[in-house]
Length: 97
Image (cartoon, rainbow, N blue to C red; front, side, top):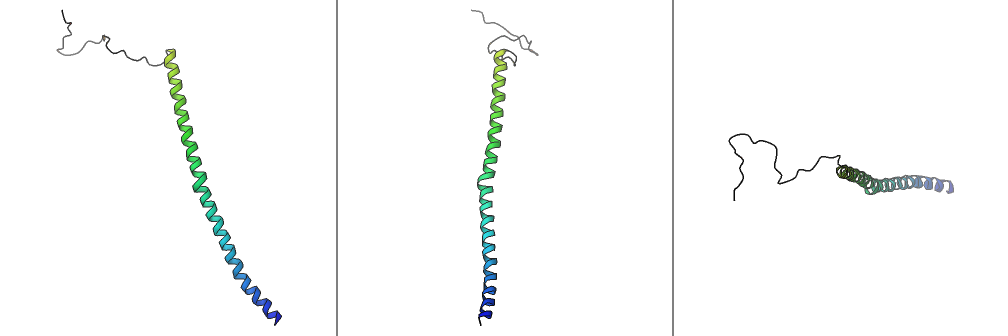
């Protein structure tokens, strides 16, 4: 009967090994899922967002430097008389004191 007992042990061990293998693959798949969606994708999105914000900040700084050097568009001064002649029946007048 020792020969028969060893065959039964093999038959029982075979399904146990496949169940263990399935569990290990499932655990590995779960770990990879958590790693990808819990760490890698958020880090990628944050890095991309930080690069975009940094690039925008550099562009604004460069524009400010150009404005200070006089190469950018000049800001309009409020309260200055314009050289434009208004169209229509409007007559520009000055108040006499």
